[in-house]
Image (cartoon, rainbow, N blue to C red; front, top):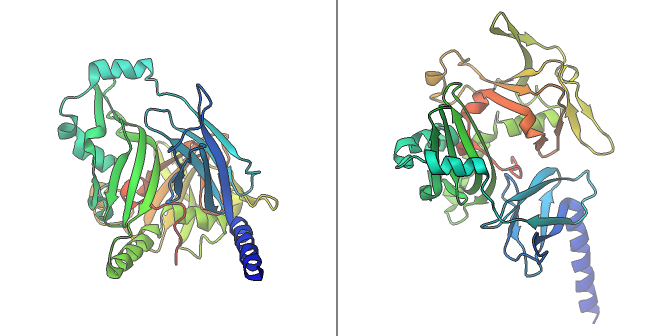
Length: 363
């Protein structure tokens, strides 16, 4: 009996320690029409390796490293739902009510008139370049189910729209991940040459490999992390920009040309503020265009071939923050509102093929 009592105490203590060391997210997924529990719905923290499925009662529990996340719920035939959670919040149980998918009228018109026959043959390579990327890591990626991708071209708007009926299964052999990417939509405007896409990625680490292969993946992930926007946001949160090789400049337009302005105090120029009570960092730069230099590495091969006017001795990216917007950063590098930031220059070159999950830890 003493041993049983001791085991029970240890089990309780372990559970308490787990809840102290992690952000515990619980909740329930219901059908909107009947409020019946939905079993087997996928629940995951977007852009992480952390996910689960609902049980027979529609319930779920996730243990997440402290920080911020978008919790996404998906189920075939139903509209996805998401909500933001944070270690600084109350973290009460979440209730998701999923609705059946209903195509918007505009989408029905697109499907009826503009779907491209043999779309993958015509636009598949272009989609891979714009979505997966053209880096060495991107080249080692493969979309395993291209048949779910549909292409729609509007001649009047000179615009390509891409949708996927099911999550894209992307195998990244360079970094050792399989990514289930629920692509909401992908749009490319040929007049501006700008691509925009939204969706919810879930990473799964490849584990069925030799120790040598795992070591190769670990080294490749470390290289992908260095200088990335995830690296930058974490360095900014911890006020380690210079130590980690980053420099901040403002990019000012003058007579149609962009000119960099060096800054003496990065954090004052960004109006950096860290709340003691929540641990959240906010920035509200004095200028909307923030140039980010990563001085420890040159651009990856191929970048300067296509972008001849960009610096060749360091990686240079631009964050353009929407007017009247303040950006909030969590300790794991998660930042919001992500729709308030436009990324251009080098970071726009690194796409899904070089992406790492928010729960990535640098050794």
